[in-house]
Image: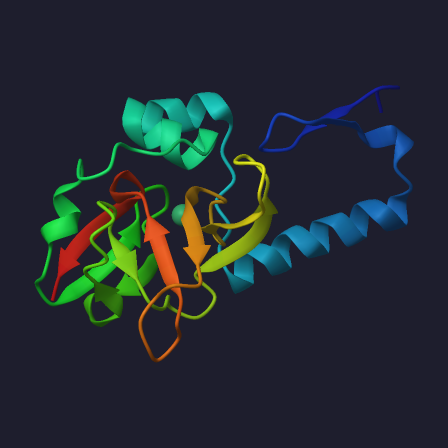
Length: 167
Ligand SMILES: [Zn+2]
């Protein structure tokens, strides 16, 4: 066996395999298997994402950019169907969760179970709840507390992060 062997993990991080105890290596392999079994996580390098996505999609999904308000055709999408993550095609909202917020971004009062994970973001100084796709990590938008019943929440989503699949 070579003294230094490298295992390339999807994000481009390099680990020296020989420096990791065997038990830990087995645990890592098990965990990777479990993650992909449960939610089928999509892990791609920045370059792979750039090749897969349009410039606008890449800016939003991978760089947490925000599209200009009223720029998305999905603002006016009122048909029955499902909204999917533009990064990995996971279903994230149904058309029944959508409402017209007047903000210029597609807005939803709820999301499909397990579709998103959240974190607190201080980009505008005050804290906001950022949410991203649980499967590919792609940024979608922020959650505000001024939505309609029954949740009182407004999931303010970049249209570029979504695709729409009519029922
Ligand atoms: Zn995704």
